[in-house]
Amino acid sequence: MKTLVYNAKVYLRRGTFAEAVLVDGETIALTGTNADVLEAAPAGTRKIDAGGRLLLPGFYDSHLHLHELGRFERQINCGGVACIDEIVERGRAFIEKHHVPPGAMVMGFGLDQDLFTQCEKRYPTRADLDRISTAHPVILLRVCGHVALCNSRALERAGIADRVPVIEGGIVETGDDGKPNGVLKENAASLARTLFPKPTPGDLVLRLEAAMKTALSYGVTSAASHDTMGPDFPEMKAAFTHVLRERHAPLRIVMQCGSAEKDRYLNIYKEEKIVTGTVFIKDYLKMGPLKLFADGSLGSHTAALRSPYHDSPGTTGVPAMEGAVLQELVRKADAAGFQTAIHAIGDAAIENVIEAYEALPPDSSRRRHGVIHCQITDGGLLDRMAGRDIVAVVQPVFLAHDLYIAEKRLGAARAATSYAWGSMERRGVRSAYGTDCPIEHVNPMLGIAAAVTRQDSAKGYPPGGFYPDERIDVAAAVDNYTAGSAWANFDETRLGRIKEGYLADMVLWDTDIFTCPPEMIGKTKTLWTMSGGELCG
Image (cartoon, rainbow, N blue to C red; front, top):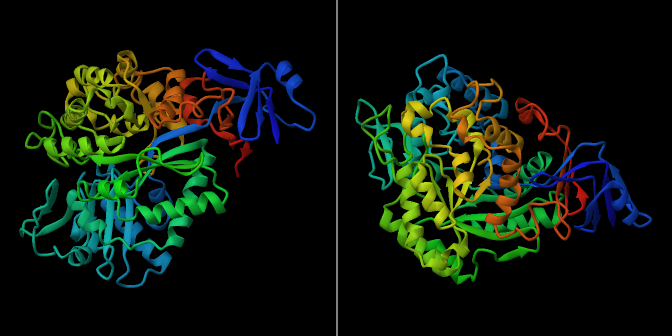
């Protein structure tokens, strides 16, 4: 089938727009003026009048968690709470609404103690969560996903109600009685995660399908999704395969796959002859990078810094693994044919990752290794990334929240060189944008707005933007969220642009973000999303 989209403002590349696009089957056949493309369209072509609206390439989210997004609806929503008492109220209401039987797990997500306004800005402890229930194990995850908060029943199930285990790369906080107080950070949080009920194959399918449809509704047509740490890889791959072959959620998926227990699952992938780029479903499902962790999060004081936290001088964060261990794992992955994408937020963690990449053979840049988040930086680190073609897989939308805590955590000097998207552009660091959904909303326009304004756009704060020299323009933000992410995932010859020969993934928006006031960008909405020449939804 041939489809003609005309009377549009079609973004081709910086400063260049067309009026119409002719699609032949799944691919783009022609772009140009209305007159030229209408003339080229054969009889019987389906015609879509765009009404003068903006047509962009489908967005390519470079890092998110689709399974977590799909599971989120069956958890306590802790986002936006003002105090611990409100969490308790929501938890009790959730148990009552869903008739959760005694002994069944109750989970929650999205808590951010830094945003409490009606109580002390601290983590809820086991005593606080026992107020939700003592008949159910209750586990809440901080919004970053790096801190698990447990009630007494959950600690009992984990076998640590009365003892404090030593966890490499993790922290088990204790109360005045010397026993765990319910706050588990970084690798220690895995003690709580092991208690999560194992989803059935049907659960996985339903969750992924719901999440993929949500992403498509916001103009995301491709996604690099981290949903497995290795043991559940076969089940997750099967669920994605089922959704893509049997359902109607045509989101292109790159599987970012973890490797639990250091290199154990890397070896399993090798034995199965699976490497980065292995295709499972042509054009829709393939193997992506090995996903690793170098540190924690800024909000939980576990991002690994080169000097102490400004508001907690006794800590420099929590490295997830020693530099030598990380370096050896990266070496093995590169040699096995794997791209790696490594979570690193603090400058010490980012430096460890860069050193691991610098220790690889000179031609390793062909793997397009990346640093996920890449938040606390300076000019020297960015120059080293540019020199090795290391990809910055960043989430500009984080700044809308982090700008309230960045200077408190880091001090003004480090904050001024962090979230440095403008410096990345000027220094030639390749960037691939995304959301880390459900840490943040999957809507890409929120990230575009944050990159362009460096504000909490909902409040217009701070006036002029947070360190405004690091702002970028709309074209750079769109390119990083489309062509940049496509390049990072070896899809630059078929995705990321509205271009002849490319797959017909396009999104029509209700507002021209190139000309509207910047404060309107985040309010822009999709009119329709096209994947492979077909309208979704």
